[in-house]
Length: 439
Image 1 (tube, rainbow, N blue to C red):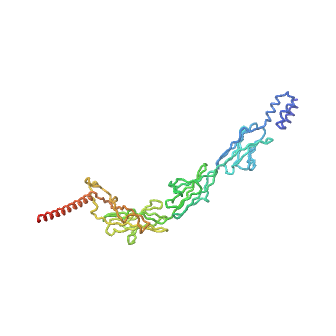
Image 2 (cartoon, rainbow, N blue to C red):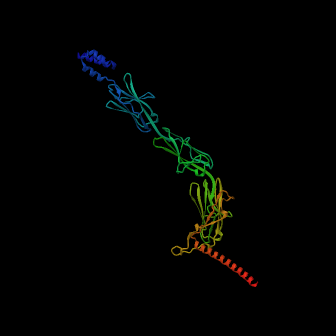
């Protein structure tokens, strides 16, 4: 009888699982329950313990998809790519020729497929399949995120435009998810919009700058980000060309003979201008002489300070000086009138410690001594490209204005006027008295 039971058990294992219990009961006449329990344990249908967890991975990283199967028995587990119906692995064997695919299992239950060096085209659905009849399967999704990348085209390159032109900067980027584009100025200065408002950043693939001015010149940053590090940026330089403009802060400067003086103009131009000084007759001032020393100092992207230092002034150096700026778009100039101050107007009384004696003397540097001139008020109508300043200061080296001496002089003049008037009054009264006596 045992041999007969073994023969029937072997036959039963080849039957569908659903008919197992019925056949066993029929053959054993409900007498050998130990056999029923043993056979049922051996051929129980496998099932999935957990759903496959969806995975998100960055390009270049690794991704792991895990399939957990219970009661697998002699059945086999396979991984497939759903969209292409490609078999990737069966049990512990890698079927695909893709060397980035690997497979591991734990206790014949947990089957983990590993994908190395993730590519963007690895994104999609993957299936874990058990070769039962009918087949059992479940799917998991691999999402591949791609950090942003700025395209060379149609992204703008460095631009050169004329002042008052309309400018549109473009920035195109790829990535997954789709990147967001943000514009900023590299120096942190706000961006002026078409409506006149100013903002620190602007979002969008284009940045519109209407009627650009020289202050809009500089580097703009196109920043692409999508939450996947790293964010990337591209630097676009906007260059604005315009003809020179000269500003003269002090158009009238007084100085004393045998002293030094410095004349200064400020020029704005791009491309950068050629700067030099001339006398009123048009003669170029020789910058390398002992008498004259000229210098140009950059004080911005397009702004320069022009200085002419004149040493040991003589009568020949007084007069008008012109500061000239030229570039490929035009030229302009500004005029400074250097006039002579009488030596008596300045007092140099100092003690050995460098301080004035007496409490009624106020020490003022010559650079603080200003002279007003109606001719310098407002704009120069003959040269509208030049601006004037109403307050014009002298640059007397080591010179100090003696306010107390000036006050004394003024007081003395006032006393003289009062005395003269008193004398005339007394003379008039004397003549009146004389007339009355004669009468």
